[in-house]
Length: 154
Image (cartoon, rainbow, N blue to C red; front, side, top):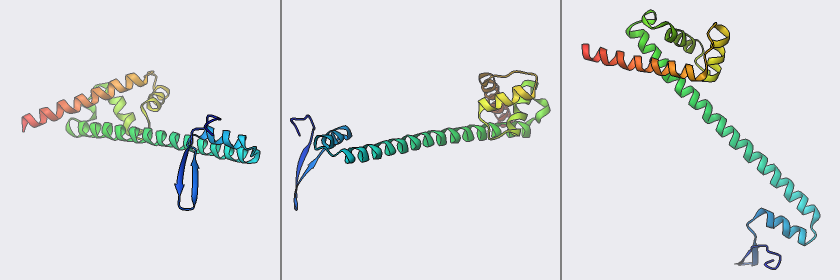
C-alpha cells in the first residue's frame, strides 16, 4: 500500500490484523488497485450521497440560524415600538419613523430586506434595506431617550 502511496496503519486485533486507511480518495484507490469495480462504484455512490446529505444539513442549519436572527431582531424592534407607543403614543413620532413602526408591527416576521420591499411597493416611498435599518436604529435611540427621560422624571 505504501508503494502505491496509500497511507495506512496496521492495527493488531484479537482476531488478527486490520489495515486502516483514513482518506476517502485512498480507499477508492485501493479498491481500484484490487480491481473491485463494483465496490468502487458502490463506495463512490455512498460518498456522493453523504456529501449531498451533509451539504443539505449545513444549508438547513444556516437557514435556521438566519430565521432565528430575523425573529430575534424583529422581536426587539417590536418591543422598542411598543414602549414608544406606551410612553408618547404613535402620533407624537416623526412621520418617517411612524411609517416604519406601523409596517414593522404589521409584518413582524419579515426580514429587513423583505420589509423594505413591502414598504416600497405599498407606499410611494422607495426605501432600501439600509435606510430601513437606519430608521429602526433611530427608533431604538428614541426608545432609549424616552426611557431615560421617564426615569429622570420619576
